[in-house]
Length: 142
Image (cartoon, rainbow, N blue to C red; front, side, top):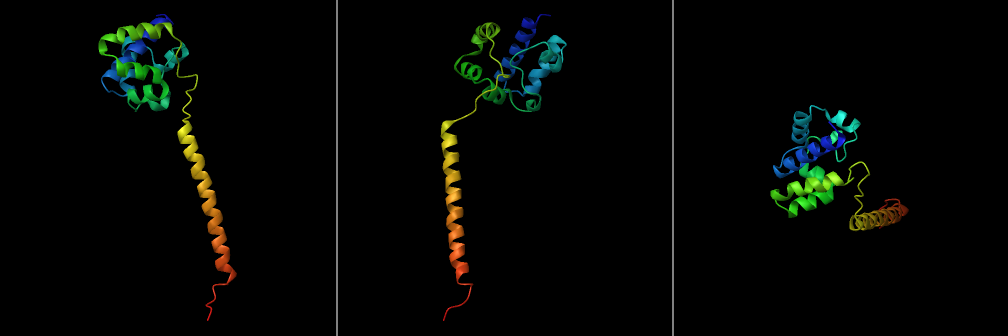
């Protein structure tokens, strides 16, 4: 079996599991049944778009949304009749999960920076209040 055929079997298994709201584990089992290859053997054969080993208990939609967002968006906007067209597009592409998806969201990063600044500011104010309180030595003034 050629690597292109193995790739098409994996893509078909992933798409079918995505449409049925199944787990990555189900897609892997379907792929192993169709090709008689384990996922490790598929990785060794150079199959693209494979999930990392730790994600097999999550839904395929989560995996696709996190690691293959272009495929997920395409599948949300197209019906099952267009899945053959998607398989043809995927056969010609080198879209992969191994290149590292950039999950950097500027809005989340800005909010995180603002929270860090607020936390530091609150710590400084708290320290200042603590020093003012300790300056009196906790004595009762009469």
